[in-house]
Amino acid sequence: MKILHSKHFPPKDFGAINLFGLIIVRKDYGNLSDAEKNHELIHTRQMLEMLVIFFYLSYFVEWVIRLCQYQNRFEAYMNISYEREAYCNMHDLSYLKNRKLFAFRKYYKEGA
Image (spheres, rainbow, N blue to C red):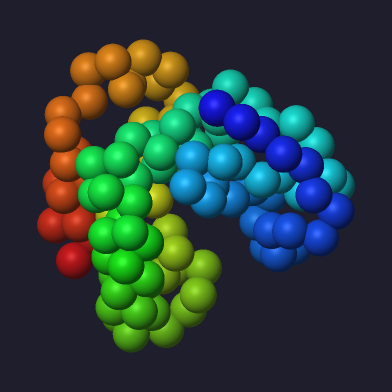
């Protein structure tokens, strides 16, 4: 996993962002914890399963759906199935060893 630090990206509301498996962390955020790295690794696995482009397309579509549901950007973000899976399992550092394919689907159903 490659981690870069940036002064201006991602936006201030986010400490880190995963773009195509490259983790970009705001310099003022500091270093990522092991749990935060695991969170980003879960996203990388999701991307690979969805052939990257479909991950980003479905992520955006689900964000719009959640935004209509919750009418709050933060709540919409927190209820995206990919984020729910990553947040729920980020502290289990062995999660990816036993994770089933397309495990995020379970979180889509729970969030709907």
